[in-house]
Image 1: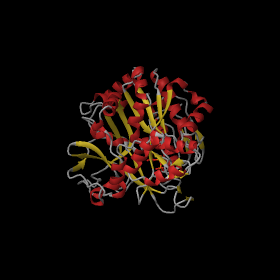
Image 2: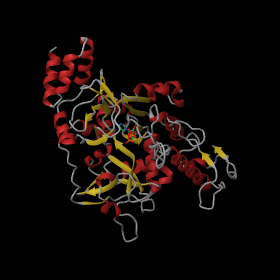
Image 3: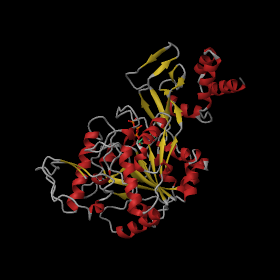
Image 4: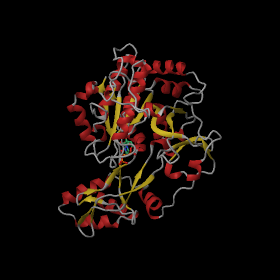
Length: 472
Ligand code: UTP
């Protein structure tokens, strides 16, 4: 009971009187206690301030005063790729690198009923995303004679379903003791007008995962960070669950991250040249001397359209959400409240239970504010952060939307395009249409190759037949 009266005080302090009233009416006591327990798990310290700032009195942040394109290691730049590759390979061979996948999102745009990592994605055999990564890790472990532990962040929405999926598929051939799942935190979803916490149904608060930036705290509180330290892991290869072309461990990138003089080995990023000025990706910028990702929605059209003398977009470095992150860096930032990542607001449709009418509501318009943290807000906390260019066709084919750009259709087409390039690089003839597109559907399993060099020495056909469907 004491706990409930403390809770009521906290609720009133951040304008949640509707819940105090509701709790007083809920019967039996066990039901009321169950709801109170959900509320008690909320961090109320900052909630009132967050509701004021992001809901009741929201004003978009002003663009930074001094903003320039970030420098990056370009694909054709004058740096010694082979030397960094060798150094990165040493790290992987020494089992100092783990994979870290954030897979706690709601995946609402894809409209798939289940964890996004279970979505059938490879272009011929329709392997789920988790399998594509798991097999890439297996191939890399064999290649480098190393153990590469895999940490997967889930959320309460999909934790059990994700774990069961791996168990049902025997961890896709990985040793289960090297695959760790942990849950990220959640935030209450808020009514966009009043800032009131919404109920999902009469017994449950409406919540949303606290963003991929919730990863830092979740790594620490779950014990994943401690596990990495025990295993001697020094760096994480970070990637999202929705990009099947991710190289699960990339020695060149890891070599640069740890050994380039421009890098502090804390937080490094990959970029691709933007497809168009209005492509919806964040852009690496230099803000007052430190590297930051500016979201596409926060960059003015004028700046986004700016070009250099050669006609290339000035703000060209599109983020593909692939990073290398030092374990010590995570420890540093989670132990210091000064480094807490900021929240961002997203206005979305959230179905809920209306306490005043006792009815469930399926809104047709955006009605709620979700508060999320973004992992890339960690970049400016690093003392020296580098950005490394990669080719879009090599590493970026995300599955985010049901149709159109970044959909399964566009992803499969890019998967084939990459497979064709890899095959041509080792002398296989690939049929192409007049416009240069590949006249076949080609899947190269991540068990066969995680980069084009892996195809050297493998028995391959001399040519791919036009219109054929091939798996290798
Ligand atoms: P997205 O920004 O694409 O969001 O996440 P989403 O939730 O998957 O999809 P939508 O916006 O609802 O359609 C990019 C990556 O970050 C992870 C996702 O699982 C995906 O790998 N993520 C996102 C988290 O792990 N937690 C979050 O709270 C949000």
